[in-house]
Length: 220
Picture 1 (tube, rainbow, N blue to C red):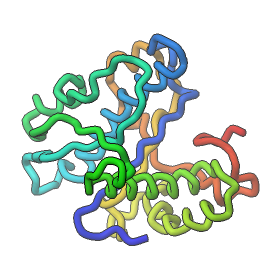
Picture 2: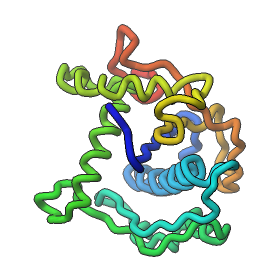
Picture 3: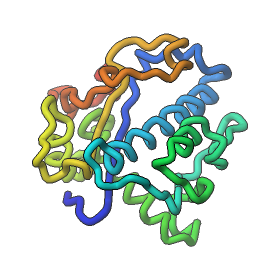
Picture 4: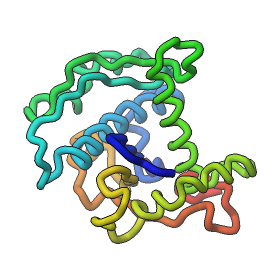
């Protein structure tokens, strides 16, 4: 797989074993939606900072002209269709270095149903994410899925490592991060004060283990 031009790809993996689920109220599906919203916001913030607004970046202000998400069924009345109501994104706006010009658009990833060319981009993202998760998580025993996933092996090996390769081909083009390194209490999640040391970017690849079918953090 080659990543060229202006494409950037970021994955944030959440260890649910280290997150206090009592923070979110409701049935399991409602909790999952709320967790998704919370950490999607963190992933967006982290990606924009890492790729564009890092310490030595020549970019002083970033303008987001379009913001597209894949449409998903929700199990509670959320507000993610209005991005300026999301606390983290609003904080990003207040910081002055990021401007978001439009509300979030939710699109069906099937371009034949949506009739929107941007759905092709969502499908491409799904493929990249699926390949990456297969290598990292080993969720499927499908021969086809495993073979396709290996197209992402070299890029992932470069960014999912103990020591960043600052001169690597995919540096500042692709990134994977996991959170947290230790148990986070309800109060810590509510406060939103996430220490940099709570994020990490290395763990073994599931596809390199003899038993490769498991979940994100190795339990069967």
